[in-house]
Every structure is written in C-alpha cells, then in structure tokens.
Image (cartoon, rainbow, N blue to C red; front, side):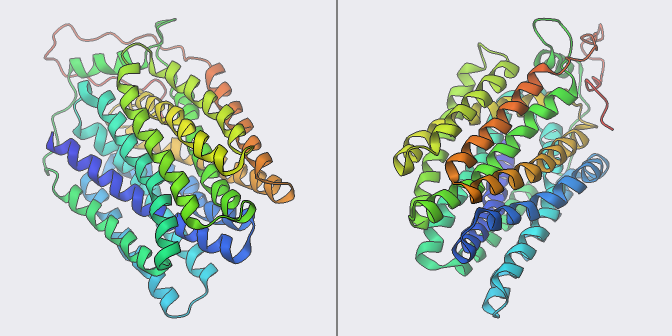
Length: 411
C-alpha cells in the first residue's frame, strides 16, 4: 500500500540521518580523545533529553495531528543537522559542536519516536500491523546500521562536513514522505481490529493479556544493547585494533545484512511462534554472541556481528509488535514514550558502567558487561507478572465499534 511504503521510506531516512550524525560525532571524538568515555558522553548527551522528555512528548503525540508533528520534527532536524558543518567550517570547537548538535537533535528525536509509532498505529490496518512492524523495524534498524557504513567510509574518504550535509538531506526526504501521506485520518478501530489486538497480546499459557510494563521492559532493553554496542564498536576497532573508519563501516555493513535477513526469516518464524517467545530467545542469544564478539579481533567481528544482528533483529521486531498491540490507538504515543524514556535512562547508566569497565581494561570486558546487563533485563521481563486482566470480550455484532483498553493504563 502507498501509505505503508511512504511510512517505511520516511522511517529509514530519519533513522539514517539521526545515526549518521551520531556516528560521525563518535568517530570525530574517538580520533580526538581516544577513550570510550568520550564517546559514551556523546551517547549520554543524546539519551538524556529523550529519557526526560519522552513521556511528556508521548502525550503530545496522542493529542495533536501526528502527520504534522512528524513533518515538523524532520524540518527541525534538517536545520539542526546543517548547523554542525557550518559551525565546524567557521572554526568552532569540534567537541562543543558535536555535543551541542547531537543534544539538540535528541530533543527532536524524543518527540519523533512516539509520533512515528502513533502514526503507524493510526494509519496501518490492524490485520496488517504485525507484518508491517517487521518492515518498519527493519527500515529503522537498517538505517541505524547503514549509518555506520556510510559514516565510516565517508569520513575516511571525504571528511566530516560533506557527510553532515548529506545527513541534513535525509531528514528532508523523510519530511517529503510524510507530507505525501493523506491528511484524512482513518475511521476508529472495529471489532476485527480488537480481535487482532487480543491475539497479539494474549498469553497462550494463561489466557491473560500481557502487562504493558512487562512489554515495555522487553522492548526498552533493546535500545540499551544497540546504543552501547554502537559506542563499543568504534572504540574497539579504532582505538584497540588500530584499524581505520572504513573497517568499522564494513563490519557494520555486515550487521545491516544480518538484520535484513532477520526481517525475512521473522515473517516465517512468526507463523509458528508467539512474539514473546521470539523476543526472549532472540535477546538472550544476542547476549551470548555479544560476549564472543570481543574475543577474536576483526575476524570475530566479521563473523559474529551479522549473526548478532540476525537474532537481535527478530527479537526487536517481535518486541515492537508486542508493545504496539498492548496499547490502543489513543494511548500508543504514551506507551512508546514510556518505553523510550525507560530504555534511554537505562542506557545512560549502562553506558557509564561499560565505558568505565572498558577504559580500565579493554573492549572484551565491555562486550561482556553489555551482554550481562542485557541478559538481566531480558530475564526480568520474562519473570514479571503477566497482569491479571482477562482477555476482553468482543461485541456480538462485528460492525460495532470498540476500543480495546491497554493491558495496563500508562501513567
């Protein structure tokens, strides 16, 4: 469908733009200061405003026109992305420019994430939502992973300013895609849509609906793993293995391929297994592979990064489906705002711990620490109570409108 293609294109372009900016800054900082903590503070500068503001911005996403908010976010990001190369060209401090630009973009991103999730819930048919979320998460994660390839190779060949100008163009492309969406909102959800919601979130073992808190913990821990990994990888490749930015980009390109394969396999796997099982198993296997990635140098990264991206991709798609289904259209912005806030708050703590461990030892222990934190989060999600709500009854007449309440009302 046209709407789905536009949403996927906009999501890919925005994810690529956000992370090209972040990866470029990380490469500039690691070249200048040679410690993971310098890169870690950059990621913290990005995570902090989102952790603080995402719950509030989630409420805005549920109150105002989501299409207009998406366009506004991308236009603001275009201007902010252009500000950094202009700052550097004028002779401004690299550290001040990198931290400042990424902090400002993070403020916009804090609104964009719940807005994008809410717009997807609003515009995509419930019967197609599970399949579409696989494509959406693939577009987002592929943009994030490809950003390292583009960033590493372009910084090595052309330097940072041209890449940062390209980055601004990606946000403009996303704004155009969102502008091409229809201005008309679809009709409210009907009974068949509610049936899809129930099927997606009901626990087959108990017949109860999974608690929203449990789903948020599961989804949010994926943000911790991928963000800390993105800070560890350039530190490991550039500062410890003494390879160039091109090697870093090539390794991340293999990760992109692994994630794309995950999306294809997920469509088949989801026919036989519930999303909860896919998410739990995928995150746990990813944590094991994370430990191994730090033990065998470049060869280990080449072989294991795509494998890790493959299992992480399936887990991330499954956890997004669970969170999307656990909230109705009216509250989905708040649900994703809470998940984003919780994940990024945990990211800040995890980043400080992993950066300290890495800088006082080496990246092997950083990978192992990241895996341990991820495993604890996954197991805590598995052990959280399922929530007492019984599967809600559907109306007798299929034409009767209904809104299924979320498993747990967002605060």
